[in-house]
Length: 133
Image 1 (cartoon, rainbow, N blue to C red):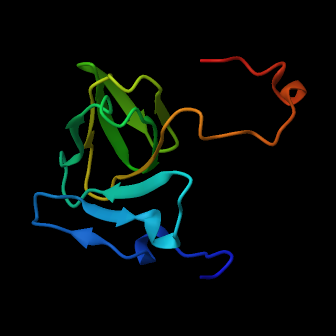
Image 2: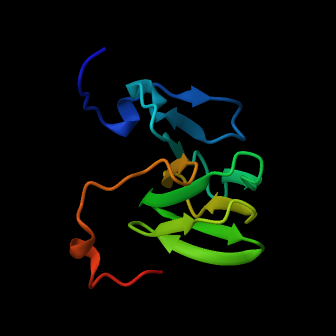
């Protein structure tokens, strides 16, 4: 396996179910083992990108980043409008979440991992003036 890889998300292998499903680019293609990463791209306006679910069983935290277009997230039923460049962090696994594309071509990056798996190499002093959400 190579020590590093580079490719456009659209060039990553994709899994395309029926036309009701978004195009799924599982970034595990790179051989990642520290966290899960996927990109979901809408084929149509209003398409479900992330089915309603929670991560209670897995205990995972998830980060969603809108790469293209816009999406409406539902977090415990509360709608959140997110445009390109918006990051949505769900740190509580029991939160029910879903995402719907605003238009065809909307792409959302999803990263998930169990709490405690990440250890920063930055010093605490780097974050003194960074507010917490």
